[in-house]
Length: 79
Image 1 (cartoon, rainbow, N blue to C red):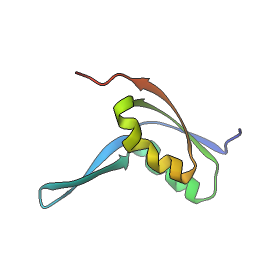
Image 2: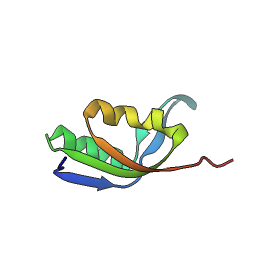
Image 3: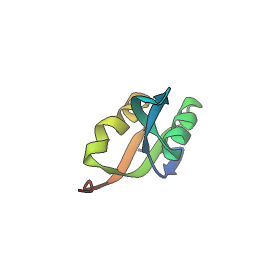
Image 4: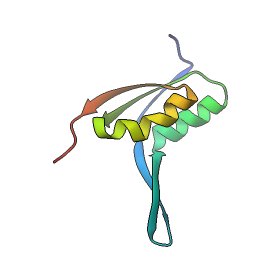
């Protein structure tokens, strides 16, 4: 498979806070927002990032929906 661009960087968990209360978690970070913007322009995008196994379900759903390939080095969560 070939790609128009490859984004390398962090994908984070962003927390939405309203009136001091956490409302939910969602994917964020420079690699996430950049790749989503490029995909919305019709480009075939890949992302290289580093994820823990526990973060995969929260952080990768948006990429799958947008049909963005993600390659990640998986790390063990800190104790």
